Amino acid sequence: MSELRLLAAACLALACAGALPAQQDAALLTRRDALRARADSLQKVFGALDASARDAGLTSEVQAGTLRIRTTTALQPVAIAAFTRAVTEARRVLGADADSMAGHLQLTLREHRGTYRYKWFPIVGSVLVDTTEHIVGASLEGRLDGREVPGVRLDYPVDRDELAASALSIFERAIASRVPTPMEPWLDHRVPLHAAQAELGPDMFRTLATSEAAIVRRCAAGDRSACRLGFALDSVPSNPVLAWYDASDLPALARSAGDHIQRVGMTSALSRDEQDACTVQQQMEICRRMVALLPAGAFRIPMPGAARASLTRLAFEMGGARGIERLRASADTTIGGQLAAVAGVPADALLGRWMEKLIAARPSSPLPSATFVLASLACIMVCLGWAMRGRPWN
Image (cartoon, rainbow, N blue to C red; front, top):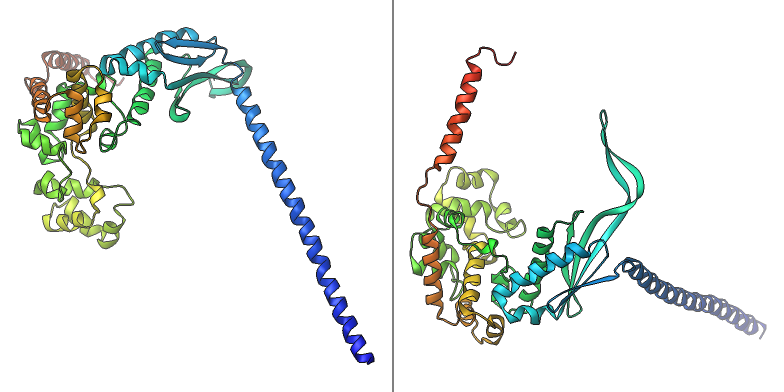
């Protein structure tokens, strides 16, 4: 009987010993959860205080049409001129759609201050020295219906032209976010509003005429079907290498197609010497093997982004007002159909007009201009005369 009592006492002691750590663990868990909740609340408070501190100097509001911009007193003068210019440029392409979009866009032009300045010393050069607080830079931030749009950093003093271009870039990204697929990725997520970036000039013609893709070169030579295929107006071909490139293009394609992740399979399957046999020695069989090892996503639309932007801008110019509305309402799922909705004409007519402008921009002669020749001759004569003096390095 005494043995049974001893065993019962031992079991009771063990149970009590196990319950005590369990109670302590529960108390620690409760305390941990309370501390985490307190830390989360403090983090929210610090975030609100930081946002209030950053916005403390935003006391001025600039308005350009329906676009409102918060900024500081120091940046207000340049902001008025720059944003008025940006909205005017957007209206040239979008018409009244620009003001409608501006009503959904919130911009903030804030200044950044510091207590340092670079000072030049004759021996040591530029040195960072302490000074009184002053503006060291600025940033332009945007939000579209509460969703953040990537911003831009600016130097100080802020250049009006640079600020206008930055505001227009934010406008481009904001509008592109409302463009249906496949148009948005085809446009590289930017609706072209900069006139200079979408200009069909001699440089554009040279770029297309010397492209690494045969289909683009044939387009520059006046082949309309090649232009249609190079822009992928109807669809991306099932075999883009065969549709877009000639055999002579394969070495350059094998050297540059895809990003480093897409090229992993190719670089691991072929040695460096085998890769050089294609890219350097231009052995076509090796090139075909290299290209075949790349995934389909490595072959992007061969027509450069600037050419796609110029075709899109031309569509907006031909279609006039409400181009974005027509684009968003279009049920077509091809690039050509969506551009036709913007332009208000068939895609073939739009492409024909684009080709006319491209051919008109073709340089009259591949030779240097007369000004360049005369300037070069003058430089040569000056150097020759200096050399004839004998030992010009003395």
